[in-house]
Length: 115
Image 1 (cartoon, rainbow, N blue to C red):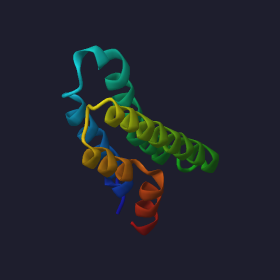
Image 2 (cartoon, rainbow, N blue to C red):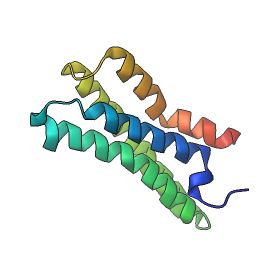
Image 3 (tube, helix red, strand yellow):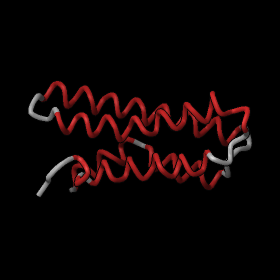
Image 4 (cartoon, one colour):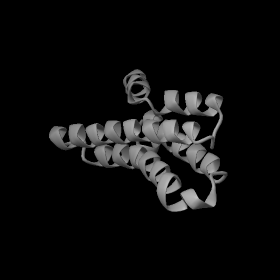
C-alpha cells in the first residue's frame, strides 16, 4: 500500500540517481562549482522532486501530468549535463552511460507502470 511518494519505486530510483550524481560530482574541479556541478545536481534532484510533487497532486490529473512532464524535462537536462561531464573529462564513459540509462524517463516510466 502506498503511504506516500517515498513508497513509489520510480521516486526511489530518481532519488538514488540524484545521490549517485551528487557523489560523483564531488570529484568535479572547483572551477565547475557554480556551473556544471550546480546544474547537474539541480536537474537530477528536480526529477525526484517533481515526481513527489506530482504524487501529492495526483487527484488533479492535469497537475500530475504537468509534474511528470517537468520530471521528464529535468531527466533530459540531466543527460545533457552528464554528456558535458564526460566530454570535459570529469567522469568515465562507464559512469556516464550507466547514469544516462538511469536518468532516462522511459526507464522511470516503465518502472512506474510495472509497480
